[in-house]
Every structure is written in structure tokens, then in C-alpha cells.
Amino acid sequence: MAFEQTLNESSDIFQWIAARNGVEGAQGWAQLLKNRRKILDAGCGNGRVTALLRKFAPVDAMVTGIDLTASEIAKQNFEGVDNMRFFARNLREPIEGIGTFDFIYCQEVLHHTGDAKESFDNLVKLLDPNGEIAIYVYKQKAPIREYTDDFVREKIKGLSYEESMKACRQITELGKALHDLKVKIQIPQVDILGIEAGEYDLQRFIYHHFAKIFWNDEFKFEDNAVINYDWYHPQDCTRHTLDEVSTWFESNNLKIVQHCVDHYGITMRGLKS
Image 1 (tube, one colour):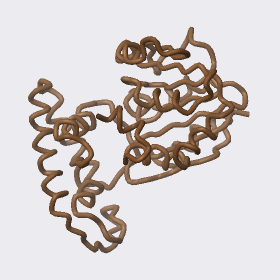
Image 2 (tube, helix red, strand yellow; image 1 turned 90 degrees about the vertical axis):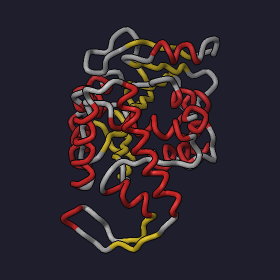
Image 3 (cartoon, helix red, strand yellow; image 1 turned 180 degrees about the vertical axis):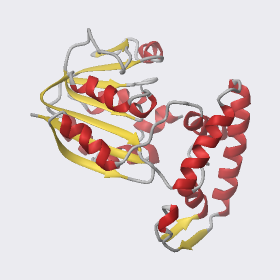
């Protein structure tokens, strides 16, 4: 489901990915990629965002995907599609044998590598002069949310997949129950808890500040449960600040051309001189 929603221009997922990258819809993606002929999706997973990049890149562009564990799945998903290739690579190690690129996309990946800065540096080495890199990493969230994330990860790290999914299904049921109430609440500023004043949907207020209890009506129940699992299960899951991420770009002589900080993470795009 997430694969299809990533390509659906009216879906929440498509619009969220576009907005955080400073892109307005399909035309914005086409404009961003119009002069890019060597595109890398680093940490491509099953290829859902690789498909997005392929859709809006020039027809003669070569789109490459790399992933430590899922490159073969992506390769199977695009079997027979021209100008696409996939490799198994570890971002923590020197990335060799795939060439260089004029556009590198690495989002929702670096924070799972064990050393986000080292992995970022390895990718920058693949960037051509005047090339662009676009990353997204988890940001440091409200303190109780951070505590809950680490608490749940610690609880499920030794469980089997099915036992972990059972726990995540219960979390998903809570998210759905809160969402279905459709309650709006006015919240005051609470600096010490990282809470900004404003009107919130009740489910999103708890989601942003206290616990990841994802729910989206566009997805089936099990798809929502898998999204919660995908958040809580990885043990390598670093969180970062805007200042920290900015120094990554500056130390690599990259000019920051766009950034976005939302409730969930930090998106930043930079050009290599």
C-alpha cells in the first residue's frame, strides 16, 4: 500500500515527501530533476521512492538504488524496466563500483545506519561537482515522546517478529481509537515538555508529544501496524538537531539550498560546489 501511495499525487504520503523537500506536486519534482541524469536512491528499500524518482526524472536518466538488505527485492520489483539498476551496499563502508551521481536522495535511512554522519560523508564522496544531495533524518522530539520510543524499542528488541507485531497491533488499535474520536483540543505552550501552543487533533497531539501511535485511514489496519513496527523495531535509530545536520553539510563544503523541520524530522538539500 505504501508503494502505491508514494506514487499517488493526491495521497498524504506523496504530499508529505514533496512538501518537506520544498517541491510543489508533480511539476515540482520534474523541475527538481530536469537536469539530473545520474540519480541515486541510497537506502532504497523495496524501491517505492526509487519509482517516484524514475517517474519524474528525464527519460534518459539512469536511476540507481542501493540497500544493505532489500536491493534484491527492489531489483525484482523493477525487472524489465529500462535505466534502473540496484546494488547491495552498506552506507557505513566506502561505496564503490557504482559510479558518481548528480542527484543523491537518502531519506528515512541515515538514522538507522549506526553513524549517520559517517554514512552521509560516504555518500557525499559519490556526488559530482554541482550535484545535489537531499536527506531526511529523525529529529529530537518532545522528551516524553523520546522516552516512550526508547522504552518500546527496549521492550520488543528480544521478541520474535510475531510477538513484536502483536504489541504494534495494540499500539495501532489505540491510534485508530483516538483518531476515530475526531476530537480537536486547544493546548497551551509547555516549554519544558516541548509542546507548542495551538489546536491539535487528539490522536496527533499524543502522536507528536507522547508516543508513536500511527494511524492513517488511507491504509488498511495491518499496513498501519507495519508502519508502527517499522518505527519501533530498529535498534539503531538516532535523532538529530537542525544545527547538527547543518554542520554535516558545511563540513563537506555543501551549500544548503533548502531545509524543512517538521514534527517528525529534518529534511535538507545541498549543492556541491
